[in-house]
Image: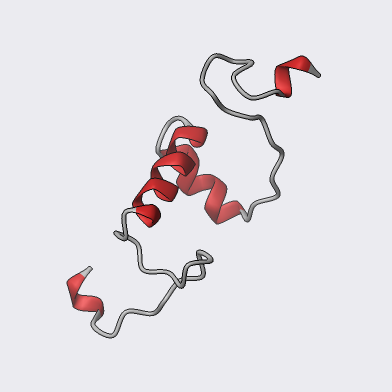
Length: 67
């Protein structure tokens, strides 16, 4: 189980197992590296570039034309 410890893969990352919807998997796979895509999405959330309530629950946009 040493390979599951942080930094075991020299990327300062921890391996996890997730259950995702087929649409989510397809979108992540379309980005190439699924792990990097998730990391990028979380970084965008942290930067305030994705509207959410602080717990990553999406907030509906009032004007969808500004996407």
